[in-house]
Image: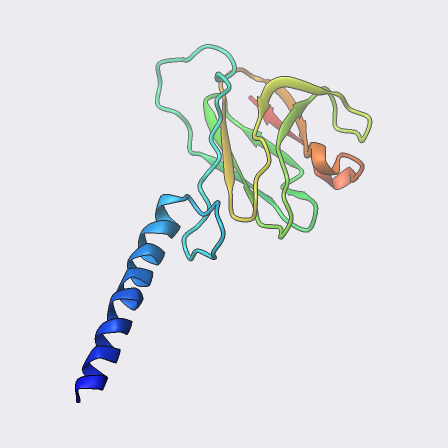
Length: 154
């Protein structure tokens, strides 16, 4: 009995410590270090200012664009001024969303908005306040025609 009690006591402390470290470490690190995590990756948010001036009215409903199979879906999205558009990466590879001066593989990027690299499940949002046509691309896969798209703001 005495040997079993010592063995149990010797194992209980390291096992309990491992559970505590695992529970604290995965959420505190934001999923960036080492082990797998069951929570969704942190969302990527826009640090760029919104386009145009506010109207003082309630913003239209948000719109979503999916990045999957190396394509933006929908390829063209029409929205009202003041709409927030959210892109979500559903591919198993990283993508980004960067404003561009056209919708071709030869388009140049602009500084209007840029998501930075987004992993699987991550999102980026941007509010379009001024009417116009806004082109964007995934700069990581700019050679792919389906990685170029546009938002038309009315």
